[in-house]
Image (cartoon, rainbow, N blue to C red):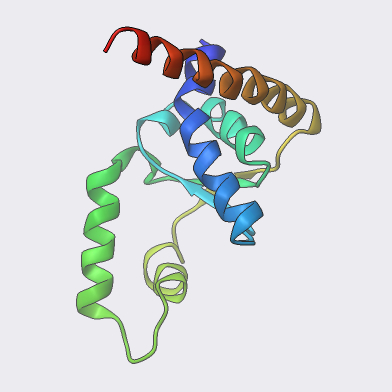
Length: 134
């Protein structure tokens, strides 16, 4: 099951590495929502290891993507002058929503890093296979 969950995070990790390394984006914490976080702690720990960033899961975590899109729409309609999305979420959405924060475990980060080395090497095999079977 861990391999399945890691595979689900593989492409996210590649994209986030572009943001972290090339664009120098810094995160204090990720907020997890959706089906991965319906089971307490499991997805959260793996995501913290994959992103090497603390992950907070709120009580509303199981609501999923449609809820996130609704939040963005509400922000666009209700934001105050010069209010950032970050401030809107902190002040209006998550202020009274209890959550659980998990820090990345160094051993799990190392395990996911090793997995990603194999994962990205495997992408070359997939690319070669598509070229053969075109």
